[in-house]
Amino acid sequence: MLSSLNNTKKSLLKKLRSNRTIKNDKVLDAFQDIPRELFVLPKFKKEAYIDAPLSINYKQTISQPSTVFAMIEALEIKKTDKVLEIGSGSGYEAAVLSRLSDQVYSVEIVPELVDFARKNLAKAKIKNVEIIQYDGGLGYKKQAPYDKIIVSAACKEVSDALIEQLKDDGIFIAPVGDLHIQKMIKVVKHNQDLEQINLGSYVFVPLTGKFGQT
Image 1 (tube, rainbow, N blue to C red):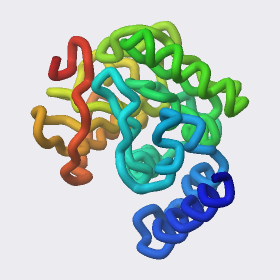
Image 2 (image 1 turned 180 degrees about the horizontal axis):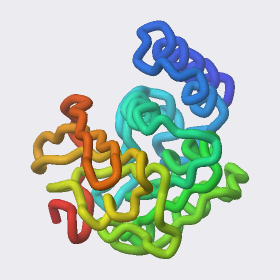
Image 3 (image 1 turned 180 degrees about the vertical axis):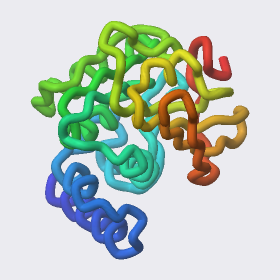
Image 4 (image 1 turned 120 degrees about the vertical axis):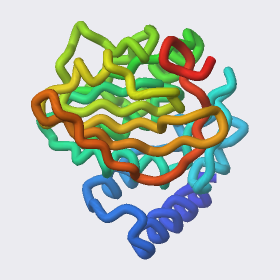
C-alpha cells in the first residue's frame, strides 16, 4: 500500500505543479513532506492523495488537497509567523502550516476531533502545533495577535473577533457565505482598514459555533 500511496502522491504533486494550481514551491514542499494518510480515517487511507474531500465523521471533512494549498498559498506565510487556524478537523492543515510557520494555534469545537487531531499530529511528530478545544468564531485571545488567520469551514460572515486578533498587515482567509456556496475571502488588514479580495467560489462544510451556520 505504501508504494501505491507514494505513486498517487507523486501524481497529484505533478498535477499541482504542471497546471500551476499552486505556484509557491515552499507550499508544495510542505505537501510533499506531510503524510496525508496519517490524517484520514483508516478506511480512506488508499484515497489519501485523491484530490477530493474525505469524511472524518461528525459532519466534517478533510478538504481536498488543492483547496487546502490554495488557501495556504494565499496566506503568504513567513517562517517567523504565528498562525491561528479555525477548525482543526483531522489536523492535516495545521500540520502543513507547521512546516511553513513558527507556531500554529488551531481551535476545534468538536471534542472527538480535538483528540483525533492531537493523535494524528503526534504520529507525524509535529511539535509546533497546539490544538485547543473552543468555539473558533471567538478566536483565541490568549495568544493574539496573529500574523495570519485561516478559517477551514464555511462561516456566515467575517468575524470581527478574529479580525481584532490579527496583526497590522496580517492576512485572514475564510470561506464566507450560505450553506450551499461560499466566496473565499482574503482580508489584508492595514491599520484599521480592511482590503478584501475574492478568491473564487467554494463549498465547505459549515463552521460550528457562533459564526457558523449551525
